[in-house]
Length: 479
Image (cartoon, rainbow, N blue to C red):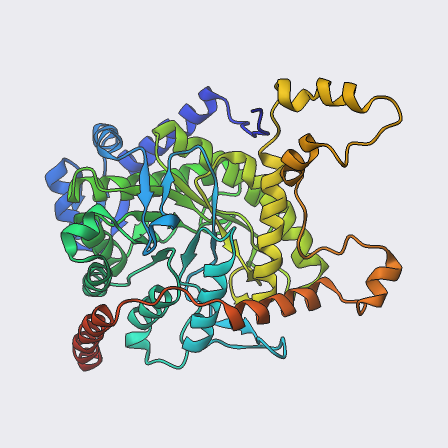
């Protein structure tokens, strides 16, 4: 089968970016705000200045880390039917994340602060939608004490989806509790090592900084066999150079540095190459959606494949403040531009305001956008059956194909949108003249009224509750 594919960097250009990244890591270095991580780098052979929290990493360590890293990673789920292998052959989609603080209200559509109940309902919606392959812990539980938000949000998400869950930890201790919670669900830490049902997005701070909590959490996850996604979020012109090539050097250096720390913490640790690099608006300094973002996604995917690493890329968000034409065309453009890159994961479904807000209706609409993009990206087969010469001969001039077995066999391959109205104007008006937004809202209500993921067993819930209480006593006492 022939599939549309985009690949625009030449081998020489990729190697130029690689060599420039090595030069940055060996000469400029990275700032690492953790003695534990600096110790790991020093023992591996990096040059470390503890006074400046600075490490310079020679090229041979990069080469060794790439050799140690697995080239395929399996994202396991509570329900094995949702297990997915990241092998660079198929692209998968995930909701947006990073503790998003605002949601468009389920009933009124008004923008407001999110709650833990919003997160639970959002996760159930994500669990139902077929093109949401994994669930990033999306919303901030604003009604929970800050010290307990992360663990609360993880438990809420795991309880409301049977799919693989992605999140982040802000400290080593938080990571340890998250590992305990996930292990309780699968039957222990050794079983979790075999079947990691969670992964962790641990973001460097561009340019070239690893904060203490983030990198020490990464070390904990690496040692537990939990996939770590080093998703940096640089802004072109602000936290990286004003050229896309220069930005790629920063992105690549940060990912390679994270890879070295993970692999020398635990050889063979699963690492996902990642970025959500964006263009800055010169007038405001804020991140914006643009074609430049897609170019960075396409290029970073090629670079990840150069190292043989699985990758997760930003790629289906919107700057729009509401579910409108802008939200639709920005998401559709970015999905269709980024899907042919061959990235293992593309994140951002349901996103508004560049990850400051989400909309349930937009998540449902995005699910359909991805479905149509998949129909395009899969291409079509050319063989004796699809050429259909015998069917054409049977029907002959002036006939029709509707009653043919061949049509019944293949018509579903052509794609049939579920939300878009394909009827006549008169038929549309007769059914209430509904907008796409209104249809999506009805679909959200239908899903929430009928869909219930398989619950976590009661005994496991009790074990998680005990872990949570221990964490609460410790973390709230520290605050």
